Length: 335
Length: 103
Image 1 (cartoon, rainbow over the protein chains, first blue to last red):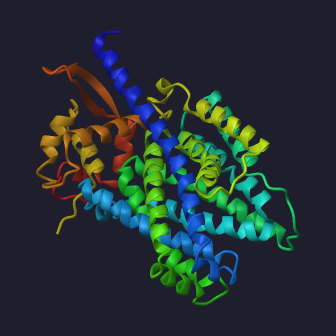
Image 2: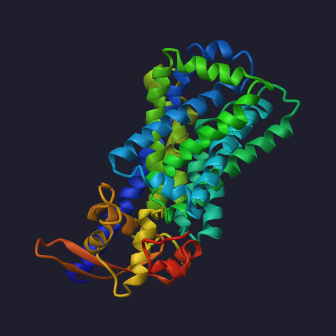
Image 3: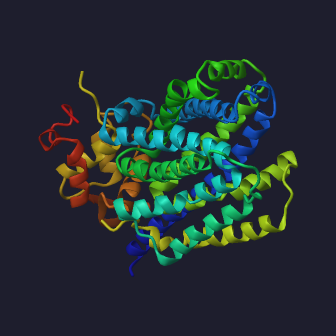
């Protein structure tokens, strides 16, 4: 191999490695963001509104953080000289794919997840929704012809098993609408899987930095218009919490969480674009482990139990297999 | 008022027109007047877009050389898949008229 070919190969490998590394950092930051959000949810006004329904707090919280993440991303894009791309992109078909992906991965998946928690309990919800990297990988293989080696499949499988083990909770309680809850869990799983694949298809022609900006604003608008009226029966409680939270001091904690989430998803979308959907999704799910680590550091809320240690080892092994050989990532599809 | 295309669309448009391929620097010189005062339109940002589009098979590296500063300069060409994807969203007739785009 001559020096030019060598330099070209090194450049390509460096780019592929970067995609994997930022995907891993995105997973870590998503875990951190989740812990900061949980701190905000333990304070007023969220605490006092939590009696109204089980999902008013997380869904209004998601609406609030998505709006703040949207603004944070817009600021990043203004600094990067990309602000004008927003309107150009939403007028194109790939831009519309991003909007559809945002609805699947934002309000649809998140609502499904919290309804699942409410109707089917945390054990089944965690176990089913942890399957989303597999859904994304299968769909990306079928629709995007993404290259996924045997080791990468094994890595995806290990990341899922590890995430289930670290999040394991003993199934308790009775759930009269159990099967409806399970359906909602599958809706969430498919929503997150579809988000990755549809946005990857759109991002072939759209800058990932703009795609994620559109994602936040779309998600916020759909939450605000279509989800908030139903978070505690039909009514205005969702809006009451939204505006009360905005004018409370707790908003500062939510801003911190939303900025962390914004950076996380910024890199998650970039990683999807650089290293493929299957790898980015598997690296993202490592947040389950990071959430426990940050929970332990920040709030002291998690005990490092035997199943967490075993789950952590499995996740790390899975993530290493997913990362694989960077030279395999130079061309991520078979087209 | 005519709407400008997103930067990646314009890069692919230019690569369809220039069958011999273009380097990031050449693309920058051809695009800078269409995206005036936009910090995103820089050779290094364009190179990042090109690397990303190469990864998904829309474009490919035709050739590469070292310049006087020992920097690797790649010339990119659009693939058949890239042409097929772009022409799904941008009419072929408009591709030769960058200031009059429809999509």
